[in-house]
Length: 220
Image (tube, rainbow, N blue to C red):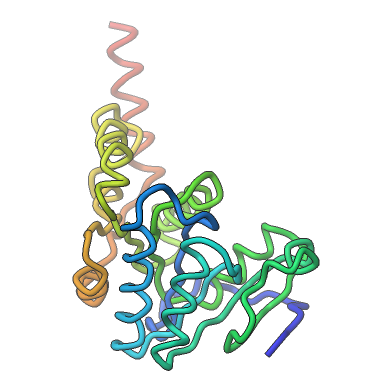
């Protein structure tokens, strides 16, 4: 079913259950066959848990593979795509639902609006942009939806080390670093989502405290 999105709800609500899960991932298959295999396994795991897929609506790469796996297993796959990409005929045919929006910002908002959690597979700039926007909002305590990395073939090892570095350098609180659930197995990652307990911290107060301490060192 094709829909054109005309309005947006408040996706920051904290009571949404994980009936639908958003997957961020590359529109390329990548260089390692393990990426497509993991996308296929994730699609099957979603159906086994009776969770609908929300994703970027494309037919290529990891993005298309996870949606096809969901549909092949009898699940629901909901695509959200921009008019520009729709005009280029990159949308996957046969989706349970396909929403068409005007801009990439609207696309991200609607995907988040529809979803009760977020899993990131290997991908590039767009994938990382989607992941970190969701995490940025979560650290402000504006949503409590679980966020995870499916770390296929150690794809995200270097990113995880960098995030540890941001904690060491006092840019990210340890509790906010721990919000990112990581596993290499799709079913195990979904189990971790079920047990997720979000942190409740005042980031502004933490920043004020760090700022005061660092300024004190500079002045002394």
